[in-house]
Image (cartoon, one colour):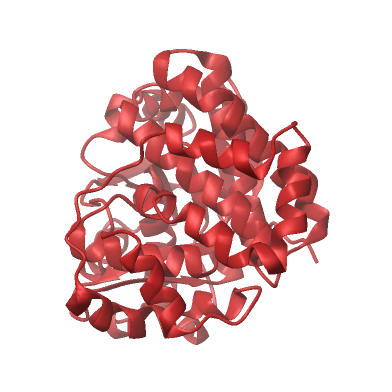
Amino acid sequence: MFYLNTKVMFGNAALQRSVPLLAGMGQRALLVTGKRSAIASGALADLGPVLTANGIQWHTFDGVSENPDLDTIMAGKEQFLAGNCDFVIGIGGGSPLDAAKAISMAAANDLKKSQLYSTEEFRRAYPIVAIPTTAGTGSEVTQYSVLNDNKRNIKAGWGHELAFPTLAIIDPRYTFSCSYHVTLNTAVDALSHLLEGLYSQNREPIIYPLIHKGIALIVQNLKTTLQEPQNYAGREALALASMYGGMAIAQSSTSLQHSIGYPLTTTFDVPHGLANGIVMPQMMELFWDAAGDLVKDALGSFGYTRAEFLAWLESLNLQAEMTIDEQFIQDKVPEVMASRNMANNPLTVDAEDIAAIYRSLI
């Protein structure tokens, strides 16, 4: 089954073309952002006049950092309620978009901090508008929100169909301000989503053509975009691939590739996409017997072999500063084994498989 409860406006001037949809969203918006990207991208400057022209008031909550935590969501909920808001607009990378979803759920269902992962408590939602300023997470078209639980020192996500954004506004121009490393890491995140759309035992064949196209768009356009950050065609290709990746995991969810990366982020502060990328060859090897034919079809759709893809991936020079030791492995393997993503693996994965992947990074 394919289900996507999000209206998508994609391309140049997407925000301006979305005015009729935005006008009916509500009267008071909470803008959920980080400190930088909403401003640097130009998205916030474009949005203000649109809201004003349509009589929409807004409050800004710019307290979202990379890897938002539960306290951030509760602070956003309080600001939403204090401002008497009736919809949420997330602007930024995956963190503000995921936070916007969680704030909507928390405010609509009056959730306590201890209930932010309790999807059985999610009975209603305020409308969510997602305006991405990176091309990686695909959060603008998914029902997922990934949050940090600092008390337990884990990064974990949840999904609920009420958390699908009502409207996604995707203008590739808003990614022009992304740095080299943000462009690289977010594109690799999107690539991970696309591959996991094939790995997952909940894979949905109806989306395979989009997965194939998404992988091709990244492989064929990433290096050019890194060299020419103002290249609209390259930015458009990566934004489209990111959206396709989001659509893929919205149906299939993610797998071990995400679960094994989360501890690298929480322990060593490795950016999420990079954490996925540095284990991508190991994941492909582990899952090859179960999903290799699907991967071959995807790579073959644009004339690549597995060896050529892995050589291209190696040429990206993905590196992270980490100090992985046996204590880390002993502590984190049980955490990975307990993650919900493990249920989606295409074959049985045991603790030693996970430990071996971590040891390969030493």
